[in-house]
Image 1 (cartoon, rainbow, N blue to C red):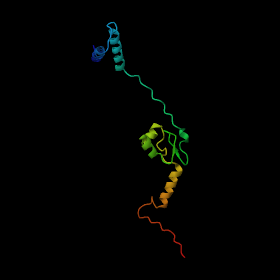
Image 2: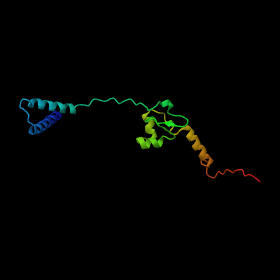
Image 3: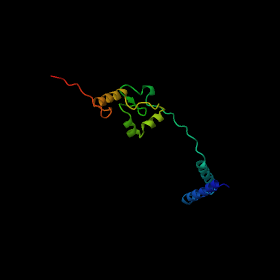
Image 4: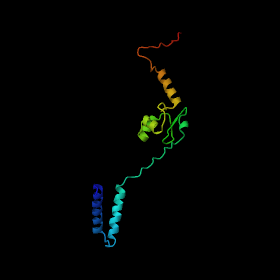
Length: 143
């Protein structure tokens, strides 16, 4: 006998003996109790059937998830200017995990295009993005 079979027989004996001590079982039903207990343990010990994963269905169409003013989250269908924070707080995902889950390209944006352009213009107007030591002289109005 194999070790697994011996172990199942021992477990069956333990379970049936515990059941019989607490419950009134006629002797004619005892073989049925033993057989059903053993069959249940064999079923549990056997290989579990592989469950096919559900196909992912986005909350909206992927092609329409990037609009000029918003990025539509494929998890819940909500629109955001920036998606990174929503993904991390609501789903515990990084942008890379999100792109991998939905089979998105590596250059899929996490920020709405108009918002990115606005923030870029704002940063440039503040003088960010220039090399150190580069001074821009502003024209002064002469009176």
